[in-house]
Length: 436
Image (cartoon, rainbow, N blue to C red; front, side):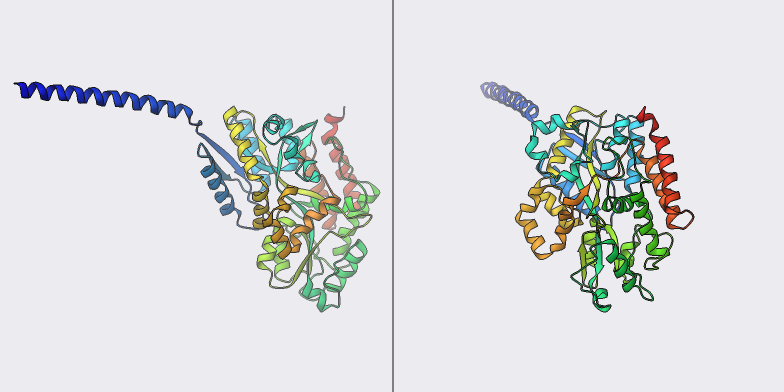
C-alpha cells in the first residue's frame, strides 16, 4: 500500500512539474510570438519588356530580401509589357484589389494621380533615409518622380536612349571606329556611307515608343514636348517639324534606313545580325548587346543638333492606396532594399539599365565593371543632357495621338508638318479639361 501511495505521489508531483513547465513554456511562447514582427505578403507587379532574362534576377532578389526580412514575403507577378502592366494595375485599382507595389513607367505618374491610386512617399522617406537618400538619385530621374512638391515614386530601372554602332562596319567603309556621328549631319553622312546590299546604315524603331524617339530629336533641336505640370504639349513647333523631317528623310530621302515600320523588339536583332550598322535603342539593351554581339561595337551619346539630349525612360516603384499600413511600410522597406547602392550597381550590370543612384557608381563593384566595360557609363554620362520623359494627364491618349501621327509620317501617308499639326489639335482637345 505504501508503495502504491509513493507511486501516486510521484505521479502527482510529475504532473505538477510538467504542467508548470508547460504553462511556463506557453507563456514564454506567447511572449516570443508577440515580439515577432507581423507576417506580411507583398504582391509585386513587375513588367517584362526588355531583352534580357530578368525573371530569374527578380526571383533571386525577392528571395534574398525575404531571407533578410523573414516577416515579409515578396510575391513577384510578371505582368507583360509596361502597357500590359499599366492595364492590370488600373483594373486592380478599379476593383479595389491593387498590387501592393509595382514597377510602372515613370511617366504613368499623372495617370496614377488622376485615379487616386498611389500614396506619396515623403513620410516614409523622412523616417528612413530622408533627403540624403532622395538627393542621391540623379536629378534627371527625379523629374518624372515628383510633382506638386511631393515624391510619388522611386527610380528603379531607368534608361536613356543611346547610339549603338558596329565598329567593324565603320572600319570596312573607312570611318574611324572611335568616332561615332556627333551631330545630325554626320548621322546622315555616316548612315549613307554604311549602307550596302543586305545592310542599312541605321535603324530607329518606329513602333512601341515612337514618342520617346521623337522626343529625343525634339530635345536635341530645342525644347521638351510638354509643360512641367503635364497639362500642355508642344508637338508642332517649327523645331519639332524639322526633327520629324530628319527621321522621315533617313528612310524616304537618304535610303539609309528601312522604309515603313521598324519594330521596337526586332531592331536589336537586326543590329546583332549585321542587318544595320547603327541603331537607336534603350541602354536597357546594353547587356543583351554585350553578351550577344559577335563583332566589335561601340556605344555613344545620341547625335546632337543644337545640343546633346535624350529623354529619360524606364520604370519606377509605386506604392498603392487601399492596402494596409503594414503592407505600405513593408513595400517601402522592399523599395529601399532594392535601391541600395550595391544592389543598384548589380542590377545595372545584370540588365544594362542605368544605376539610378550616384553612390552606386562609387561602389567597388561598379568601378570595376566600368573600368572593364566603359560603355556602361555612357547612358549615365548622358544624363547631364537628359530631360523628363513625355508625361501628361490622360497619358495613354496622348501617346496614342502622337504615336499614330508619327507613324503616318514615317509610312508616308502624311507629311511631318501635317502629322504634327493633327497630333497637336487632338492632344489639345484631350488636355482641355486641365486647362480651364
